Amino acid sequence: MTNFHHVLANTLIANVTTSYLWFALTFWVYLETRNVALAGVLNGTYVLLIAVGSIFFGSVVDHNRKKNVMMFAAVATFIAFTLAAGVWAGWVDPDDVSADDTALWLFAGLILLGAVVEHMRNIALSTTVTLMVPEDGRDRANGLVGAVQGVAFFVTSILSGVSIGFLGMGPTMWIALGLTVVALVHLIPVTIPEERIITAAEAQAAATEGSETEAGGVVPAAPPTTDVVSRGLDLKGSLAVIMSVPGLLALILFTSFNNLIGGVYTALMDPYGLELFSPQVWGVVLGVTSLGFIAGGALIAKTGLGRNPVRTLLLVNVGVAVLGMVFGLREWWWLYAGGILAFMLTIPAAEAAEQTILQRVVPFRQQGRVFGLAMAVEMAANPLSTFVVAILAEAYIIPWMASDAGRAAFGWLLGEGSTRGMALMFLISGAIMLVVVLLAFLSRPYRRLSEYYAGTSQDIAGAAGAAE
Image (cartoon, rainbow, N blue to C red; front, side):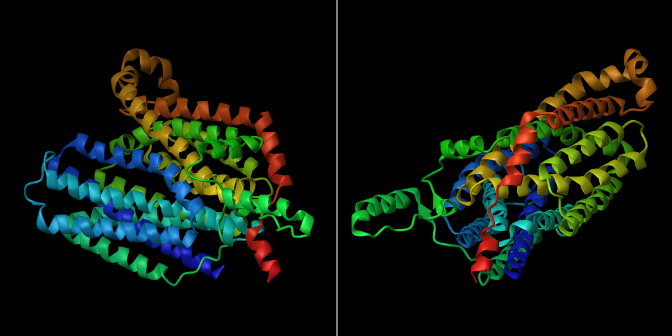
């Protein structure tokens, strides 16, 4: 497990570095231009490129050794950030930044490219858990991954704003470039043991050669299916793998639906928080509550997910739905902050459960593409609903809840205050999620996936250890 811990530590450094620089860039662009649309375009493009790129990244992960994938991502990020630093030093004028500044767009585009490519490491990390961690310890390893992601979120949420506020964009750029070098140098001696990757064409050729020489008594052993990888993106093959596992498609669609509902919280959490707190205090609240993500991941790393991660995933979503319904029932700061903290505590369990399920039921050499495809589908849902929810809230729900009719209809439940329209949307979205999760408990795909998970096994690390 020592090598795995080195991989995890290296991923932490890389994630913190790219997130630190990216969020610092978006803060700086807004503060310099006061252009909401420009900041929105940058953030929207980032999410879109990760969603679309995840499909391609997954194919890269499947077709190459995991160490090589991580090295490629590290080098590509270093090159992109180095070019961005060159543009900053030679072209960008910090005192004259505007939305039509070509230098600004090139500078931001290079940072965006480096941040998106680095995301390839996260898909590689998910498959590395399958490769390096024995099956009975994967849920705890995924909890550890969640804790590391929580640390990255906590550090980034604090450092990005502080760095722009006290240092400015230039020093922030150079700090990020230095940390990128640290991550790259640290990764070089790290080893990730992995068997040679066998393509489907090679497997077919070996099978053909074996059948031709069978009469002579020479029959080459067929390579294990976990070591065979199909050509190209192979979306058709990835879909076939998903469809071959009972209930897996339903799991991905369920998670996508939850992300669609989650768009309500993405769109409204900051406006709601800024109605209750000053910007400075709201930043502190986000930083403190993000510690829940670390604690939740650490708890899973210690206790695991139980015998049936599918059941654990649904139970966690019951808790998330209830939290979504109640944390805005009154305009009380402690209720809202406490609800966010509880939400952060539970999310690592949900993410670890989904990862653990996929790592067992999906063949190893298809996992990169399945992880990438699932991530693309799930991520695409959230920005869409965020956009729709923001418009509905501003144009219809908030004004209606401020009217006499709205207060008469829901005042008894939601109380008084300027945020009652947003609270109503929290309540409705949480109730919809709760109904869907309870129906999922009664569904056939839930039972079939639970049975399939219990009856299958893919313990690459355990088998390697036994062989030694």
